Picture 1 (cartoon, each protein chain N blue to C red):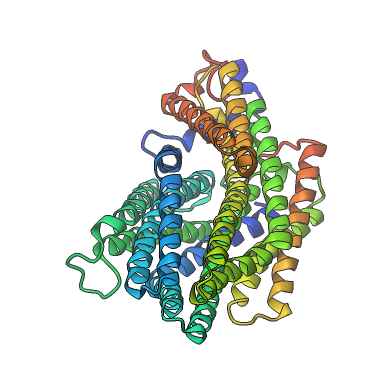
Picture 2 (picture 1 turned 180 degrees about the vertical axis):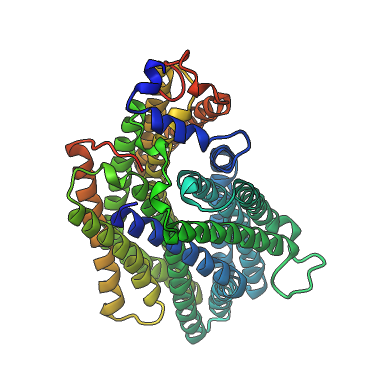
Length: 165
Length: 378
């Protein structure tokens, strides 16, 4: 098996396990609490409105905003890690058909794997920091993924290269 | 030696055939995986037609009642209506999760079917792992589906019911099976004889497979670009609008401004629709693209006439493009676009079922030189 295929295959399977482990941990220890926080903060905000208590409305809505922000990103990171993992494994299987040199294949394999790791990681880091760094990591990961896949698609279109695994 | 045996692809046919024994791990992963995707998609279609829109209307109606109860100063009615919103959202969430996890595990099963020859374990161990995977992959979605109905009945925990426990156990089984596959792959890579492990299936150049591979990559790329555009242009503004609408709703209710409450409610409903269609289009384009790419490799095992194999591949790609495209148009054209999107989903289901039947019919006759037009080509 070529180095590029090994990077994609091992990376993909490891990423799938990591994504599933993260999802399992989140479902068991954090998701129910997060959903309760979202529901209870909204109820508190509207109850505050019924009591004409504007400060309570504002503080409850802030709690809702924070809980929803974290929940959306946890779910996004989980689903994107697993989705990218599947793409990596599929690409691993057909990577030797690419009409590229081995050096380029390895480079593209690292590109697509790095994007698959960094994009959801950047999304997840946004739950710890609202600053520009996590967004930059997510944007960089996303760009790496799209550019790598675009180059892979072009290489597939150029010439089918038969290979026996 | 026959002409087939002396052909350059004969070794590939032999190795591919050897990996597709009756009740072998690859066949279990492949048939089980497509079966999970089929059931998950059928469930998703039924859910979309009969539950999703009705449920969304009920959520919206209860949210409006809660806002108007706040306007009237009725805290009790606010809490009652939010409890109803929570119930409807849980109902919706568990059904979406059932659909997503069933199809997701189906995809993972297809992936494991692809890499099965490189998993350096005994055929018996691999068969056991495949069964553990399929049991877990079935248990998790069924458990998730039952969460809404079972609730916390007889549960020893404060917030997790028996259905959740069953679902988590299913997820654990899938993880164990995947971990075992990873260990088998690692063993293969560490083995000095690893270069002798071959899989002829990957090397077989099937014209229908090439069609599916090209169409699949294009769909994935379009889905990525759509997702990137959504993240760059819409994501943060949608999050801000979500917060602003709900804040405006509650603050306007506190200030007894009925017009502002209704305006915020209308904008919130519109926003939820926009978010749902854009995310669904992005996710479905990528999922169908991946499905087409994975099915491309297994076309040699689809025991149908070449012309029908090509037709079903085209039907699959047509449905895969139609569904996300029409989902995007739902905001502008409403039910017409929604109906076309459901039709696209149905096309994918039918094509997938046809391929599943073709694979089920592939029982070993591919090696026979007497049938060069079916199964693995000569």
